[in-house]
Image (cartoon, rainbow, N blue to C red; front, side, top):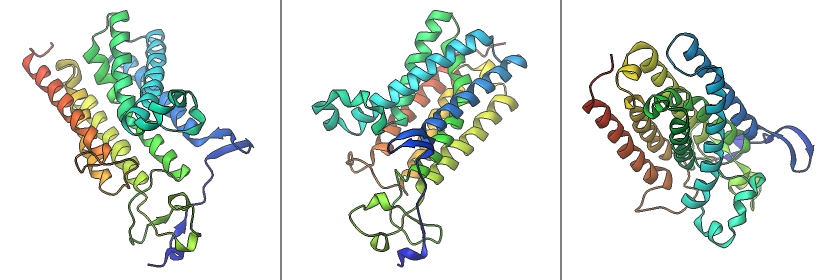
Length: 274
């Protein structure tokens, strides 16, 4: 392999930089765009009569989702991927500028936020879950793009023509000696973002699954996410120790399949809503 024949990642993590480590980061912008897109979709569902949430309810739900994603993602990252760091330095949770978010943890945070919101607003939890999963792939897409821009969560070594040299993957060696890798962040952006968005939107608009079988679409999303995540993990360099020979992203996805199957089973056992 000739690493210099490949593109060397040189993108800045900052959209606008005010200091050495301060400015507007693409990662933060990705979260903002994801939440804005989710809010826009929820309002569109309301306008066409596919959601009971008015504008005030949507705003309250979005605040709950923001808290769920950030707290769940942050806490999940250190519990699921870096437990040793968290055990010795619990305050690392507060140092958000150091990075570290988990999509699996974010999903758990969203479930808790939805449950609390459903109890407070008396809106069916499973209906809310179906609405939210149709918006989640947008945030996943922007998040993976931000991962690529940051030059983090890179893929396994390869010699495919579109491979990328990520300097952060081996910072102790000159660029010319760093082997190229799969841009797995872009693979995951396409799978977890674009593909799942197309699927959930098709199911939401072209079938009656959401109104007739509350919870089923959420179950389908969890299983579909687990499948594409496991596929993407085949190209991604594990960023933490393996569990039972599996990458952590793959191992934790097993539980998503179980949860998704339980939701689908529950929905199938209940009479279809009129």
